[in-house]
Image (cartoon, rainbow, N blue to C red; front, side, top):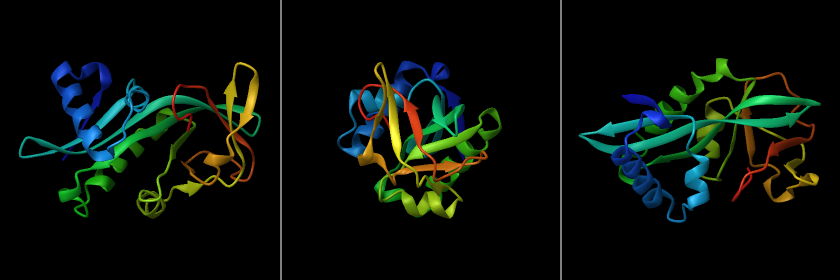
Length: 171
């Protein structure tokens, strides 16, 4: 069963539990990655009192088709290795996707390992070039081309897309 909580609803011990889980799950989960996962809604799956899956949906602005889109951006999706292939990742994604009506679009940056999960759920790869909005204007992020996936919204997947600036990985 998935529990949805806003970051502000999680007490420090719960935040510590999520951070430790993500550190273990990713191995290279940075402080910037952690900050990116905060400020929105967390989908949490516990089994026998142990956190086994997590994902968060945070608000961001994406620029596409000449519009600024209010976007729910998926971050920090992980499942404990010994609990994979039991539907936990799909349950986390379903809970986050249910929040879509609050946004123009849902988006995420997919790892190679995550692509099958997202594509099976109807997420589509953004085929156009990616950029980031910096203080000096849009700057191309060609290393991120082909890794951005979206769900919902009426957008041209071949057009350029830009994200708001943030420290660490911008996508």
